[in-house]
Amino acid sequence: MNKPSIYGLTFEQLTDFFKEHGYTKFRAAQVWEWLYRKRVTAFSDMIDVKEECIKLLSEHFVLLTLTEHTRQESADGTNKFLFKLHDGNLIETVLMRHKFGLSVCVTTQVGCNIGCSFCASGLLAKSRDLSSAEIVEQIVQAQLHLDRMQQNEHVSHVVVMGIGEPFDNFTNMTDFIGVIKSQKGLAIAARHITVSTSGLAGKIVEFADSDLQVNLAVSLHAPNNELRTRIMKINKAIPIEKLMESIDYYLEKTNRRITLEYILLKDVNDQKEHALELAELIGNRRSLANVNLIPYNPVDEHSQYQRTDRETIRAFYDTLKKQGVSVSVRLEHGTDIDAACGQLRSKQIKKTKELQLG
Image (cartoon, rainbow, N blue to C red; front, side):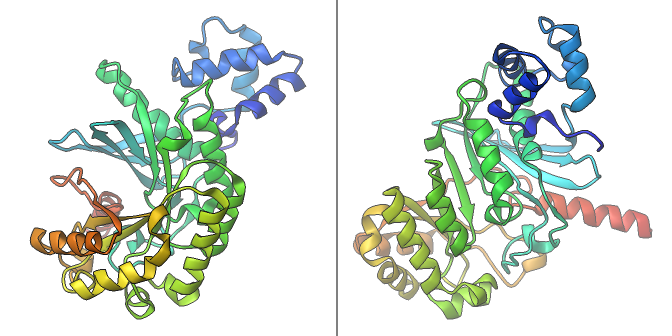
């Protein structure tokens, strides 16, 4: 791709671009509205923008770079998109329906190197980071799908929990947040944006210092080093003690609540003793921490893990509650399609390789 995507520009950067070419801030505001409010799919569709400005944009930028390869729709209204990037790589984006609105889960990398032993996203190693434009366009593409349905619905929430480790693509991820928060554009409120990390302690500190005012979720998944190292190899480099130090810094610096994500794996980390140990680990952080229990979506390649039954989930939940821990169980979406993050992508790539060999 010779020219960059215009979705990679913040409003300030777009304004600077026009000023450098002899135009006023008004022109930037006009184009921004066409991009994010009217959501054109070609520069030429900006009918009240001067022709020379259209030509200028076309000479320097491209618009849409993602193409829909596959889309699965669940009975509950969840849509999972498999997008093809300009270089042929595939990524996943998920549009989910909630009582509180519509949320989109975005991907930040092509593949993942974190290597969690239960996760479909890590089945294929990271080949590159996504640009901020490619992350922004996932939201735009989801909104374009809603526009085509003609139901006057808008994306209101964003979770950065798709394929990849967002904090391993920190600058592009934070630039993306700046674009989607813009009140002149998509206007997604900071309190409606959540970023998830597997626990890159140094980046959690940097995230706290960035003052983005968005929510943070940390994938904990185990209450002790021995167990966490067994299921998440990142724990070898960043043990729980170091992770919790960075969480303490975040809590003190931001005074914002944090979510501790805990995926329940049958007979691995879902017993009462694990819940008690988790409560002890959280300790005096109870007032600013919420544990989000996640039912496991089985992945063929990780057959050593099974789904915890409802009774055990309830017992784990009740144990934490009795210990004074704020806890919730994640509402599941898309269970009748390839629900696990990265599953659709890995299946498609495997299928393509089989066809090539066959």
